[in-house]
Image 1: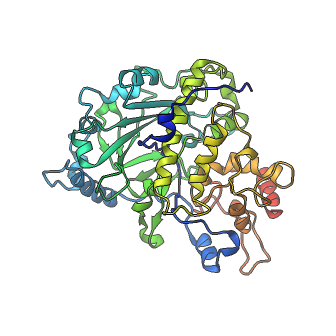
Image 2: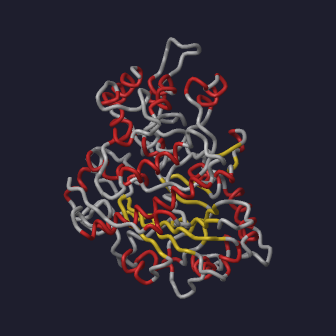
Image 3: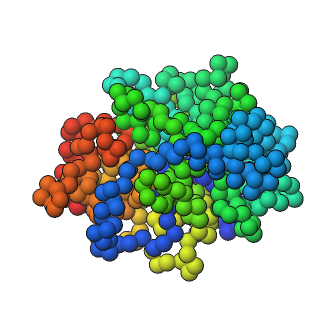
Length: 477
């Protein structure tokens, strides 16, 4: 693939203050991660006892969260309950745009206006990127059935200085539109349709606290329904995170409630398994991993190569063009901002081995500094470097990492651990591959019944030969 070069101003490289959220799955920590040999029996027991599905939360916690959040932001002067807030048409996406200082910008403008045009209208305040999103795509379809491919559009708005959001301590907002192309892959995933079949039915919003703010939390979560129906505030989104089989009535899609499910994905939960709560001080934001998106064109989504839509939708198909360079440059700038935000939530002084989320975005930036080239998976093995790192010149690494990248990365790019960190996978080898001779014997999560919440992977049923190959390879770590 030809290596392309683009320009990223020093202001973006050094002084970017906004942050981007990828709204993906993430479990982010601020402490130096333990090395495998430091992990105690208690740690291992916790690993086994955890329910590995994304905690969905519930309506009551969502109501309580909205009541407190809107009051803290100065948007609930009437002291409405959370239930009343959700029932009111007032607390829609339009309210948030007005709050941020964009009264004349309509929610439909955000969703339907092409990224380049949108950024040209607000060149100092908006970054926008549209892209292929394997993370939100349900791959648990019967053999021979077409996949309904997911795409996303993320828009970062800076709060207008001196207006309500800025005065309340909010620096920026990130809108995420989740769009589904349908099973006809020749149809444009982003072009507005008269029948609204590709409209975002679950639109996510995160407000980000400014550096000088006294607000309680680093980020605040919100969920909205279809704009054609008013863009009303909702308590949950529907997603296929745990949709491993159509014959499970509780699956595909499930309901994931603010703020618990959001926190599971953006910073982690604390407390007993029966009542887990967001660990709000650790709420971080995820980077955009373009390399993984391109990886997926070689497995479940190979059919996308034959369509006219590029992985970076705004960059089109030809990766040697200025159009692609500019689209990739937007992603690069956003990831620079993410790296700065992640760094701010690390302990001071920064530990010798920072959280893997920070190391991952730093590695992405290093690999893509000055080029748009798709990086090989072994180039993306997380530092620190050495014998414990994934290597392309040895087994089982050569075969295991590509398999885990395809089947496990959706969650374990950041939830619990990052599979590109080889010691983290090795530590869990008995849980992944099973160990009948251990005390007590450990059954592989890959062999558990579909109904078991610990069944892996959570979003599909593996073929027998693939499952057995992963188990055999991981035992050789």
